[in-house]
Amino acid sequence: MTRRLTIKDLPPTERPRERLIASGTSVLSDAELLAILLRSGTEQETAVDLAERILVEIGGLANLPRCGLEELTTVKGVGPAKAVTLLAAAELAVRISSRLRTEKVVISSPRDVAGLVMEEMRHYLREHFRILLLDTKNKVIGVEEISIGSLNASVVHPREVFRPAIRRACASLILIHNHPSGDPTPSQEDLEVTRRLREAGKLLGIEVLDHLIIGDGKFTSLREQGLL
Image: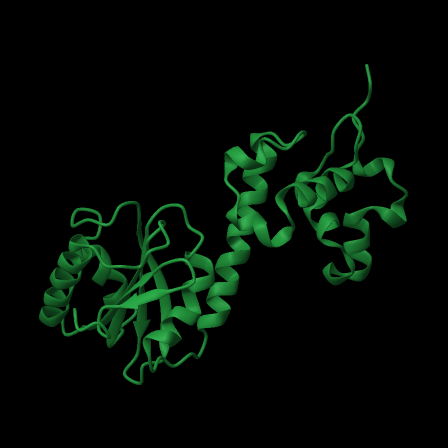
């Protein structure tokens, strides 16, 4: 029976873990960083070889957050466990990037909001509903994920929206969700949910400033459209 190749089959100076320990993360290639997550390769490949092939088949590292479990497991040598590990790492990278972009940002227009979330949210295959929390000077306090799935009154309930707003002591907030179709035209459900949340915000003293709908490279601001 053929033995599966592992990182240990490589010379110590070529092993990604040892190189990281000796010189830091910046010296490693994309494939080497993925290989550390993969842990092992196939019967014919080391983890580095497998990582390089994954990158080729998905079209590069930038496409990893856009891959689904089913797509990754079609790559020979990538089972559910490896795919889940890669997807979790990709999602962490996306979230870290999102958090860093929001630090000390002041919102002065809907375009500022779109600039924070567009690149991430335009690729989602399901609807994600988020809120952007602002202080009294419209500085971003944080971004909170409220729900994933179809936007409706039962999923986006005022208590779920305003709980983090109250906890973070924000002065106002902006509603954000994406349309997986790529068309940011607001639906009647979008308008109804916005109306309900604005009313709830008035009672709590937390103003809902806008509702942005993210499409594929474009967005709609309900405030700009006179729909708020």
